[in-house]
Structure formats: structure tokens, C-alpha cells
Image (tube, rainbow, N blue to C red):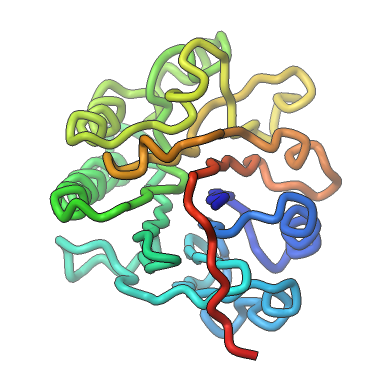
Length: 265
């Protein structure tokens, strides 16, 4: 079973890019972030024609998350991160697919910092930590996938001082990511590539893609019951170099679990 995460950065503007990648990579489950579309603008028909069922939570202009399943319909279990009833930003969605709980997240960027956006970022991650603890305590197979907007370690960013004040690399942000690992979640990419330089995001500005000035922002965390089933993991870097590409590349894992189609024709 292949599970991927992809910050598409506007699903309708980059629908052709998405469909091309789905056709070649053939992931069984996809967590999408930054849809930048209302619920009614989500391209459900085009994705269904490509063989994917979907659940989604849209938002005009910004944010938005979705979970796709190849040959199946995800069973929605939650479309909001608990802990703040006043939060209306579409940043979290959760569904069951083939017996696995799939959580798709698009964490706040937090810039500029210090300030209210950074405060919101840390509060959001605290809510994620609380919910993630409840999920892992169930003992169920769970995947937490998405754009965390955190660079976990100095090696996860190219050599630069330009990000020193950026919310993505602050000690408080890194501590929030580390707290998830301390709960028992496993960073799948680091599990498979403990020493390699890994980037998943290259800003459009300052020629960062051609000179490989990247950051690792997109992560797939696995619960304890899934770690032993981890067979492979990777980053589809070439997708970032295509015409009209998102500034993120898809990340993925392969688990020793058989995907079962459940769509009724």
C-alpha cells in the first residue's frame, strides 16, 4: 500500500500536474494540502475519472485539505482539529482507508515571528500533539501525513542564514515536531534515510529549485503498529521540476499492507 502526501498549492491551477503524477506514481492514498478552493470547486469528477475517491475540506483563497483513495471511497472521521471551536481554517482532515486511519494536515506557516501568526502556529501544534496522543493510544494503525511547516533539524535545510528568523526553523517549532516523535510516532523518511540530505520544498524565489536550495517540510509519521510494515519511502523530486509545478514535491511510503478496492460500480 503506497501512501503519499503532496502540497499541491492550488488544486485547480495544478490539476494537470496532479493527474499526471497520479497516473505515473499510482499511490493508493494521497493526502493533499493547500487546495485553495471552496468545497464546491473541488475537482471531484476529474479525480473520479482518474480512479480516486475523495473527502475534502475546502477554503476559499487559502488552505484546504483532502484525502484521495485509489479505487475506494475514504470514510470521513473528522474534518477539524479538536481543541479550538473558534478556529475556522481548513487545515486537518481524517479518514479511514483500508483499515488505516489517515490524518492529513496542513500546519500554519507562522510567519512573521514573533507575532500572532507564530502564536497561532504553536497553539495549533499543541492541539495536534494532544489529538495525536489520543490516536496513538488507540493502538490502531495511523498515518499523520502532510505539510508540517517545520524544518525538524538543521540538516533539513540548505546552508543559509536567510531563514534564521523564519518560523519554520525556530526552537519552539522544532520542539513541537520532536514532541510527536516522543509520543512514539516514527518519521518514515528519516527511518529509511537516516543520514541523507532530504528536501521536499523549494521556494519559487531566488532560483532555489535549480540550485537545490531546499527545505524538508513535508513529513509522514507512522504509528507503532505501522513502523514494522514500512517497506520503502521516497520523494518524487522530478515533479517539482515540471512546468507549472507546485513548490513542494510529493513524499510517499510503501507499507506491507494490501490495498483493497471498495468502490461499487
